[in-house]
Length: 117
Image (tube, rainbow, N blue to C red; front, side):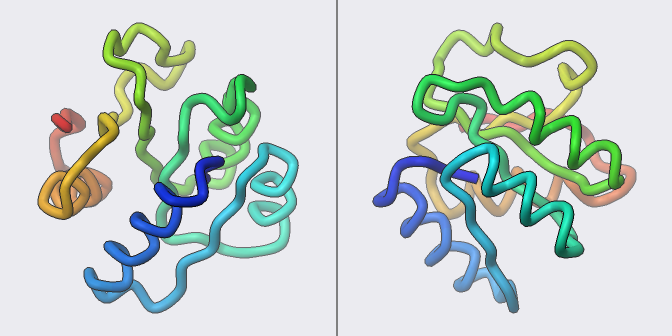
């Protein structure tokens, strides 16, 4: 989930380069919730702030369905993780292909939940 078109296009290209077979995107919380309710996801990447709106409802929906996810953010302080999700991996924007790859690896069971970016 990403609300900035150029960043979304970059992420989609990186995920395709990683061999992802299907990439679905949403630019708003409502779009994301609708997709989560109608599809099955292996993993998700969630922008913390969508056009000034908090993405907590999307994080809650993903967690309820057991979908592993990581946060992405342009916020440099890192103090905006929501209650219950402070153990999630956070990918700081802008990030490289290698940083995205490392962050996604953290979604695998048994991996550490710390990412730098």
